[in-house]
Length: 81
Image 1 (cartoon, rainbow, N blue to C red):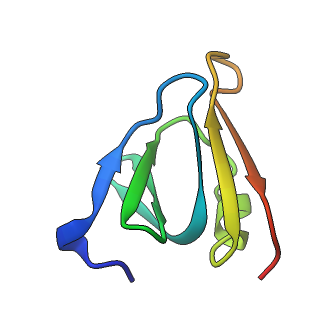
Image 2: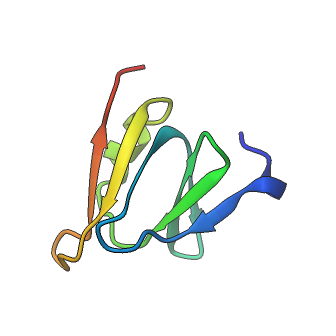
């Protein structure tokens, strides 16, 4: 687990993408927080497939925020475990 003192939680802007190893998922007050390996966490409120995210823990991933209200985030696994 990443040290909480150095954890930065932020929201991606439309068409901003972040890559890193997914370390942990947190559910805090209805917000889904993705913790990445370099002490950065991303708040995702509209992503529905939590099982896909759980399966990606420990893998390098990419998260892209879009401006499409029907699909506000695109998520992909870049490499296996």
